[in-house]
Image 1 (spheres, protein in one colour):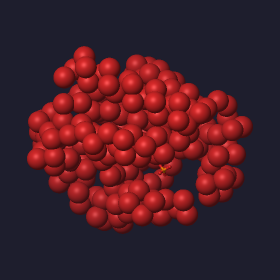
Image 2 (cartoon, rainbow, N blue to C red):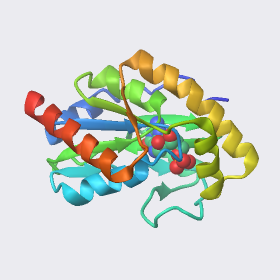
Image 3 (spheres, helix red, strand yellow):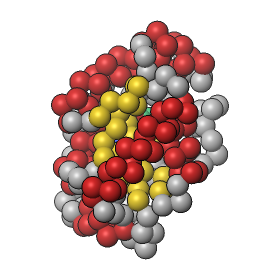
Image 4 (cartoon, rainbow, N blue to C red):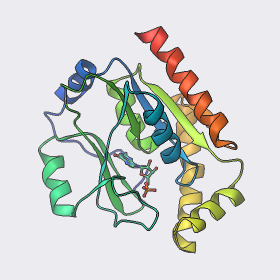
Length: 205
Ligand code: 5GP
């Protein structure tokens, strides 16, 4: 499994962090196991907050049945590799066999940026932007996690791999100083995260 590997990055990508700094007062990193609800939370947050924009990642993963049309920019490996070698990603990682990356944001945008990425990507963001807000959305237990994964279209083998990966990510998230947010009630969790973002803006604005 490559998910925990710190990827090599081409030299010359340092200005990417500056691009974020210019365009965004605040960067929020939302990580957590697939199936924990972070995508739903992220969409709810940007819907209620015009000052927040959700980055659309690139991935080589095939589209899944439950993916929104704009969930990702779905690309092939050659397109991903071309952008990566041009330094066109803020961060990127291989997760369970597919590539995922955050494209360099448009510096004109000028809004706060929400990244829904895995913890290995979060580590890369933390290295560049230690003042970002790092939140790890989690589920009550692994049985619940596995049933959510099966329910959204993963086969049993991939669901099991994701549950194992979640355990590893939890430890890494703790190590990186992520704040853990338990999503056992969607509306309450969105309210909680919105409040954390508000507080973070207030102390970093
Ligand atoms: P999924 O296949 O369930 O959509 O995503 C698998 C994992 O990749 C999730 O943990 C998701 O947060 C993460 N992910 C999605 N986009 C990115 C990205 O741009 N960068 C990184 N590092 N991880 C991402």
